[in-house]
Image (cartoon, rainbow, N blue to C red; front, side, top):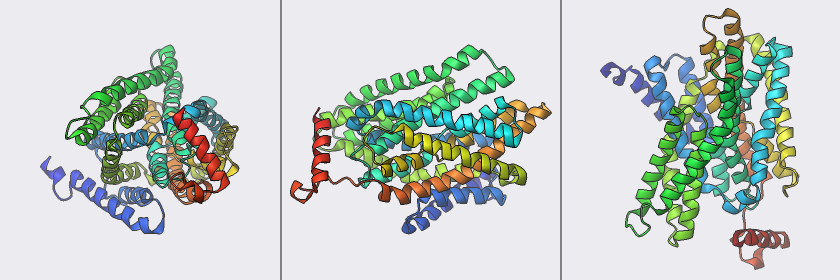
Length: 438
């Protein structure tokens, strides 16, 4: 272990990755581009020049570090959810988490069958991999926009962030079902039930954890902010790692967001000193530490050597059409909820970046196919397109969300005196005040 920690060892090289990724993020910040783009590119570069290639016993270490970082950003997302907007948009959240994914997975399946020669079942497996949006990319960008007031009045960041975790559960569960059918793994009935059960388990555990955190520690404790921050973080880790160990991958992140939301809503009702905002600020600081860890390690998952020219070309064609259809269906899904065309376009743009789920489940089909030459060939195509999806959609999606958000979303101006508001702003303010006061 000493050689791993010393210069040239894998722990040392992971440390270098995190430092360089942080510096790359800082270098991009003045340009207006999202820092995660620089962090992601550093990870890709260090992996593909041979500086950092994790051996077997360090792969789970990297995976666990990614989960810890994901817990931080999921909690931050839960703390930032708007209760009034979430109540008003609850059915839209469910639609957005399901309809675009089904459309994209179906388009991918038939395109992969026609262009890449995959059997239709393998095409649907690829579609399930690609259908998951990446909370790791989407949520930080939306949190930054929400902190600046963009889209806050109509609850657009809340809509997209809440739908992201449900979307992941749907995609991961569907992937498990299709993989089980291909390789006949376990009871198909249980695999089909795993998705709804995962949603229920994540929701119930999240609510229970959030209610617990409302009352412990006592709000009169002199260290209440520190204790709430520690307990919320610990509860998030327990949910993500614990539920994952039970076999319900994806339910933990949903529980994490729900726990943070339920706790935060209770704290806001109980406290008048703004301690809820102090807890949120603590997780903003933690995210500054863990962001380069998450995106640097995601970058190291991208192995450019597996990309073959012909597969890349056809894969880009398949990916392009499926993304267009996903964006169209996303915009159609949020019709009728009071969004203008710019806001619908933003939701569509915010709903396609891919990274974490593809990095996690993209290689699983290849692992299951070992020893079956034909299956290995199909699984290699699935892995190649998964890598391609991360490489294309993560940086492009992050840049588009960050740069177009201020142009497409209306900025929150409810803090202005009414004498300085336009008539439209006064009307919107009245609507929001009515929602908040019930």
